[in-house]
Image (cartoon, rainbow, N blue to C red; front, side, top):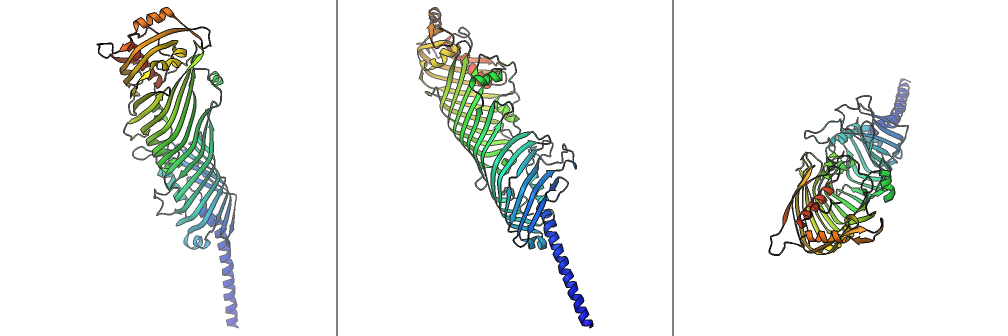
Length: 552
């Protein structure tokens, strides 16, 4: 009887143990495992979700409305101990298959075949108050390291074969006010061979803990605040395996016609219409791309089209452009940019300007453009000089080359420019000189033009050598405003030709090389300064400085 009683007690104990173990296991799988896998809240982030459904037999877990939220109640938003980047993530649905529940229970390891995140919204906050590295650069490892620590709370390892992200939205914003820097939608991504553990936490060859990652974005459209432009990016692809980042098309499109645009702007301003095709970034820092920075060895642009229009019949805005040269603006960009080389294989630049006196537009065209830019960066540890080498055909006919060097560390905006133009018939400039200057070139040959300037925020100094012969011009007046009909001013034309030496050099005379010391109109651009300096040198060379009016 005692043996039977002991056996019965043993059976009851075993049964009770099995019930307790089953209840404990169920509780662990349905509550503890999701907490371990899906980010238990800590002092920096709060983690919330609506529901968890665990199918132990099939190894599947479904999470509804998972959210990772920076907890600003723990630290002040301006606390310098916060990382440089913070995340906010919302995922309406997370579906995991191939989950090895025994590994989670016994070894504190989460191993799964596939994780699918449907329509997640990820916001990366750039925190200017956060800690920086010793060299004052952004702490780009902080985000990854922090995610690693949160993900592994209570776990030894998370290992997933594939993570699929479909129809995601991604935003980069300023912390803590949330002003948007960048926004993209309809993003699809694949992460392969993810391993989150102590051994991979500092592996810089991985992207988001994955051996390989790919990102595809079909379309990004951004409108500027004033509603004058639309910025669009089409067919974006990021591949971590070969460290490449490609954009099929990039458009900066004005939303108004030329007339409507300048009317809305109310002041003289450049209307920009840019199209760039087949942009390929090589050897990119993929983690920096995801952090919103642009760091790569090389950018190649297969084709670029730039169209610029300015209507000078509107008043110019009385504001200084000091500190707004292109290289000075690069330093102000709120993200890190470091491109060792930029190559433009083929391009076309068209600048059209409407003259209020004639109500006609003159167009400067640079065709067959090719260019290379070296050391394009706003990083503080750069060598200090950005070089631009530019080759084109002026008006689609005349070979033109120029080299500009920008001194990035110079506080006065220093840059140098030297260039040359080859032999051409001077009459090809009549489509410009007639509507913009009321001057017609009857004859002449430009043998060459060479210039070399040192420039800063306030002036351009240098030399010009303009070689030409048989130059004859005609001063015009317009028969009727807005028409293309002109009449010669015979007396003024005679006087002009009598003042202008018809060649440089004159027979048995030395070549005339002139010096230029041109004061900048501080309300105009860098390109205006270069053009005015060249125009001043050309006037000096032909001996009519100040006698036929200023450059347009």
